[in-house]
Length: 94
Image 1: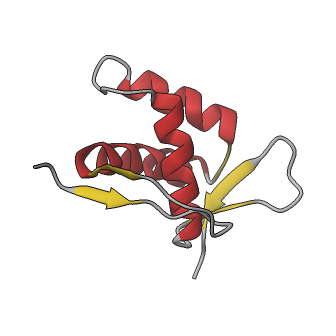
Image 2 (image 1 turned 135 degrees about the vertical axis):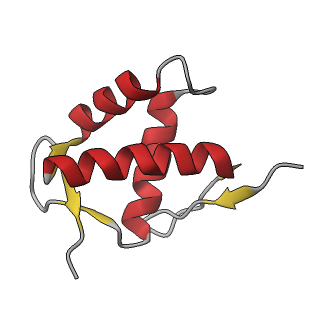
Image 3 (image 1 turned 90 degrees about the horizontal axis):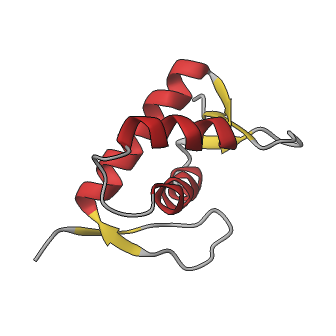
């Protein structure tokens, strides 16, 4: 049986139980792009992750980007920049 992780949602909604290897791969890709850009739109992030993982990732890349992004927001790792349109993301500074 594969190791799994229950994701969190920033609004307290139910998370999903996903494969730990897929979560880790997606998490690394998202954090790499957010850190390297400083600020990035959600659309840019999705496109960058798709380009990096396409052909190497089993599953819907868009769905996993959204799910893991929400989890990282809920855990306080990344944040949406308030009132940004389109939605922009950045690392949470401590």
